Length: 116
Image (cartoon, rainbow, N blue to C red; front, top):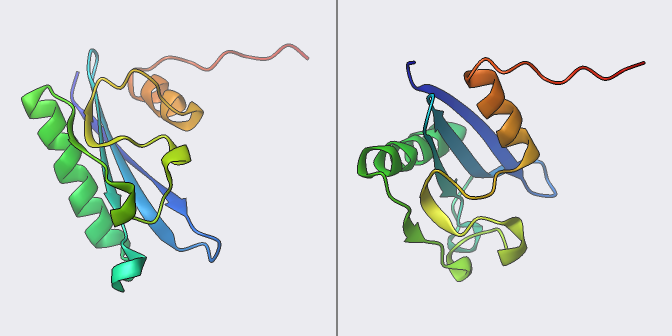
């Protein structure tokens, strides 16, 4: 199976994309790359740049088959409760519900149908 790439964003109270997440998914592996906007340093959200950084980090995790680069929360907009601990993650132990849907979609797993 080819590796599929997905992006999603975490937005601030102004709806600006302050965190960009890239998932690279194949049959047996998942890699997550995360990019942050440092608003304290005056950075402005830019989806294009966020996607480039996040995808580079996901690729790095996939190629090295490793979880790398711990996040220093004083450097970014999110807090420790946002469940991002590394910028590059190989086969994350926990995934968000949205990420699980993307993984299932990439692998051709149909969502369970609810009974009416």
